[in-house]
Image (cartoon, rainbow, N blue to C red; front, side):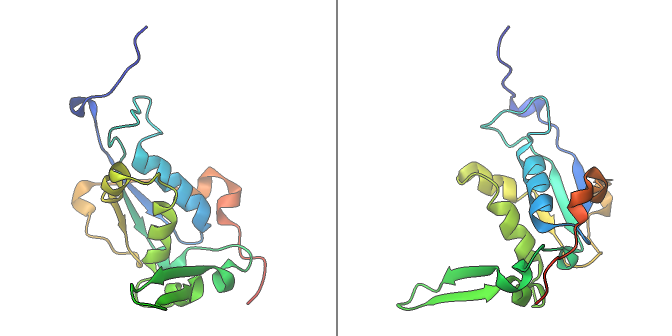
Length: 158
């Protein structure tokens, strides 16, 4: 028995639509990262971009458990001395680009490197319910129905 290794001719990419409204962020990110890598396929090959194209809508309505909405902090550095900056998840979700919380969670679940950056180009995240990909006829993946824990509400306050 020889080990199967996919070639570019063997790769078939489909389009997946996921509604993130009320879904726990980490659980959504792990499912999407799995789809982007292509690990859900029997023909998965680690060094190839085998994953599907994923569209996420309602990213601004994603759920964070516990007190993460108020306490989870995103840091970045401007490149200047003393230039470290931070924002909480709440500030980002209520700001101009709430989809960035979802994108960062998914990006951090992929292994680093050139292939992961290429796989991230197959991800489209939209804050609202509208998306311009109707022509691709995406199939809907109901993340909420996969596991009851995927829709847990926030336990703590603040």
